[in-house]
Image (cartoon, rainbow, N blue to C red; front, side, top):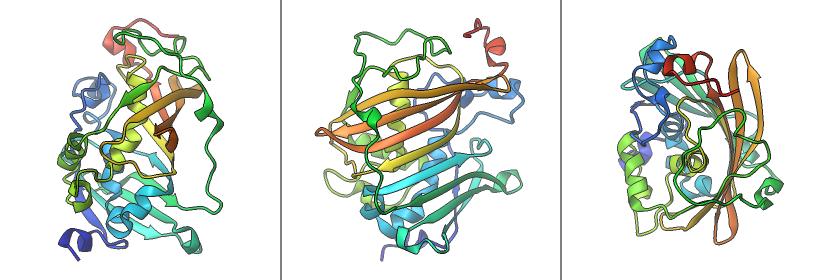
Length: 290
């Protein structure tokens, strides 16, 4: 067994260093300045990068079996900043062995060992059917993205325009580099499995394909993986805001994304985030959005 696979056996904790994703986002919470002015210790590492760092034991143990069919729920509890050390523990959930159920916890060793994120994953029987939102038609339009994401512009149950692209080996190499991911299957062959971070990132790409958003914080994600995606698969992503609400001055939204290839829904992503932080617009000098 390769050394990388031995290192990431389920039940064996591992450590990794968190890094900024350098993903070209307009979200100012991923750059120094705004986070500190809002009282945080530094710029946030992308939540999906933390998620990617938490998948290593599952992929090391189960490989394409887990990448191809699983339900995943992750909650981001505390921010992670550049250069901080995460200790990741992956443990089976007692009594749910038939579901292949595991809980993954990321502890921030650089911040007193606090729990930064918790993830559960399982393979239920019967497996969830595709959400009815996947049948909705996108509202297509052409041209560059110029409209800001605000309470008023984001209409619940109104789909965004389509996002269409073909992930390349460069997408995998990007996450391999950011996450220091040494598992070999993301590099093997002409069409290796798409890195799980890139799979879940499709919902964020669908959002930035519609609106400009300058502050946001990822709260959690539920994903239903029906079929494994590979480098070279032509993807068609449908994104729909499912619900929005206000809590303690923050504006929240849950976005749904159906990721298709060849007409098949391969992944469904339910992405919950604060899309306007209390006090952020005053710091940025932006007018009220609601």
